Amino acid sequence: MNYFNVISQNFHAVVTSGHASFAYDDAISIGCGYNNNAQCLGTNIKTIVVCAVTPVRPVSTPLYATGIDCFQNYQCTKPGYNTCDPAMGLCSP
Image (cartoon, rainbow, N blue to C red):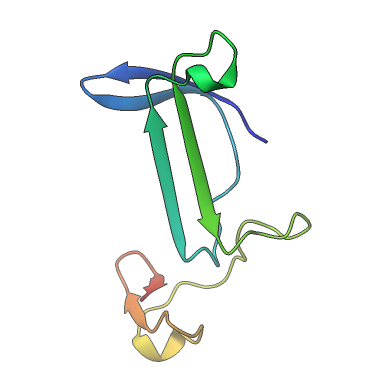
């Protein structure tokens, strides 16, 4: 489990410290929830942010695989990522 320090700023949750490696190259969806009244934890914690990603990344795998920049769509060979953004050199859905 990963822990973060979060402050409320202009109606947004801002992470001030902490880290986690939950976003990775095969992630399909990432979602987060924010609760400003987390009394159910039985502690003095007042705010909780919970995030999840699917599919779950196996612990032993790297966050992403490095490769060469694409410049045309035919270089995008990963299923579902068939459009090349040549300015960024990345393939996207």
